[in-house]
Image (tube, rainbow, N blue to C red; front, side, top):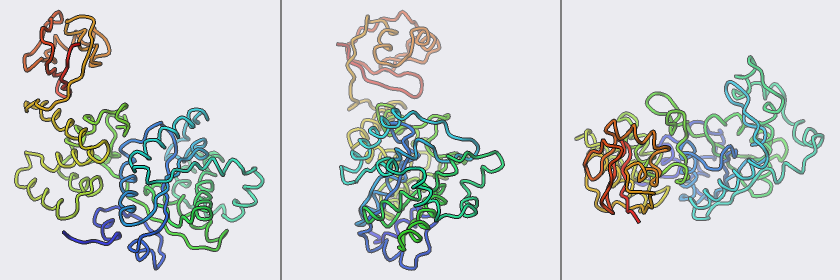
Length: 397
């Protein structure tokens, strides 16, 4: 197995875009034992797979001996990070609090409780406006802030003072964690570089200390869109919002020109294992071995081996493979009618839509196509295919 240092591993996987120019940063990365943080604003009660590369990077750093802190922005989330074109919608405080609890539970589960989760509202709430201006604002020049990409790109269209101040709040988070947790490094997506360096600047001016930081490139699909967006909708890490199978199918469809990059970013396979997968994949690309490996490893890490196995079986069954081992879902329909069965299995939102689907030949039971909406199912256990993207095993109770 090819042995790599922490820095070599991150570089091999393409996970470092920008980094502070401290002379000893690479050495400290390789030594381990740094406390670091990465953050997210609680805009929803679950993270989505666009966040997942950051989560996995934190796990990688942890494997090399570093100590992770996740900051959930209970304070910054009330304002919103400046978007490229328009101001974010303000979120109600009660919604933010609910979102924080959802994200905290999710992240603790993903890290087997080996991560500390903090909320920046806990220290920002103690500031008065005057105190923040005196204790923090006086250290950062307005021209310095105007030169930040995250701010300058909004100057023509307009930016509110609230969003303009966001970088100071995030910068102070780094100061607070440096003082209270000995957190000397921050990692984030490349769009956060301006906010991160504000924190490094504040630590130098307020504490007279040196801090470290790096950003990860945004992960894009072959069309240049953010990874993990499906027709404008996020694929959530919460399997109650997005079933594991849906993420599996999304990854199975990854393009050949991107799949090796995704294997590096989204799996814990080492270089030798990835090289071997790609060698076999390139011999018979039609088998999509690389995509199948990516999907399986992704779901295994996110939801566990059992969920990964079920997603794999469902995917293979969808394309005519064996349904052996497919987990059955018990249902209690109002009748044996195909529409009632599909309603009970949450496969259709209404009978009228189910009727159209059946009449158009989009439903089959145990490989028998059903075209009559009045069809009565006589079996107690069967496999139902809905269109080209859904297959379930059902048991009528």
